[in-house]
Amino acid sequence: MSRRIAFILASAFILGACSSGPKQAVFLQDMPSWMVQDMSGYTTQGIDSSHVIDGQVQRSEVIARDRARFRVAIHIADKLKATYTASQNAHQKPYDDAIFNQIIQAIAASLGHGVQLGEYVNPNNEEVFMLVQVNFYDQAKLQAALEKIKPLASETIQQIAAGMKKIFDELNLENATKNHHDFTKDRGGR
Image (cartoon, rainbow, N blue to C red; front, top):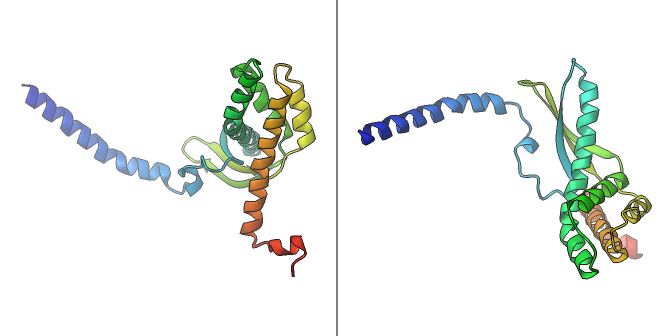
């Protein structure tokens, strides 16, 4: 009896798996590659979405773009989290999720406008997905926003600022390399 139940369950599973193939192919049809790729290596890029309400696609695009930009702040903060906790611990200062969320807000406030790299409107549920890259930030805004977070040690603020600078310096170097920038000219070369 147990073999018969196992056979029935296995058959149902196989039939279910086979029949979901075309549905998945239709769902993924015309979807851009950035929607299905692992984008975790791109710290300054963010993807987010917004549902289209009352046919207002442009409004949903703005919301999705803002959310994607905020997602960049989350990515950056996650990269800096170990620095934050180690520095706060070394200075016997508190570190918790509430303070970390304030750091994310400070980073978000300092980010420049995002460059839209991609947009996809899912025809199945009218949801707008946006891929955004942030190429710059305002150091003074970051510093001022971090200083308003009272529990942060001054050394922690300096380390977070240094981490942000490093992330964007690496991005600028990567972008210059993509554009075949001649670095010898920066040092007086010909």
